[in-house]
Image (cartoon, rainbow, N blue to C red; front, side):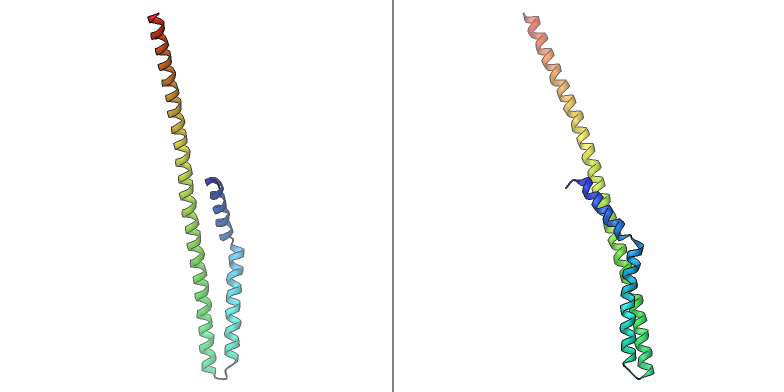
Length: 127
C-alpha cells in the first residue's frame, strides 16, 4: 500500500469518525438503554428513597457514558490527525528526496559526459 493511499484511508476513517449523525445515534442508543435499565430497577422496588437513588444513579451513568464516548471519539480523531500528519510529512520528505536524487543523477551524468569529452579531447590532441 502506498503512503498516499494510506493517507486517503486514514482521512476516510477520520471523516467517518467525525460523522455527527452516526455519533449522535450511538450515544442516544447507549443512553436509551441505560435509561430503560434504570427505570426497570426503580420499578422493582417499593421504596421511594430507593427509586430516587436508582434514578439519580441512572442519570449519572447516562452523563458519564456520554462523556466517555465523547472523550474516546476525540482521542480517536486526534490519533488519526497525527497519523495523517506524519504520513504526509513522510510523503513530502520522500518526494523531496526523490527530486534531490534526480538532481544528483543529472549532475553525475553531466559530470560523466564532461569527463568523456575531456578524455576524447586529450586523445585527439595526442594524435
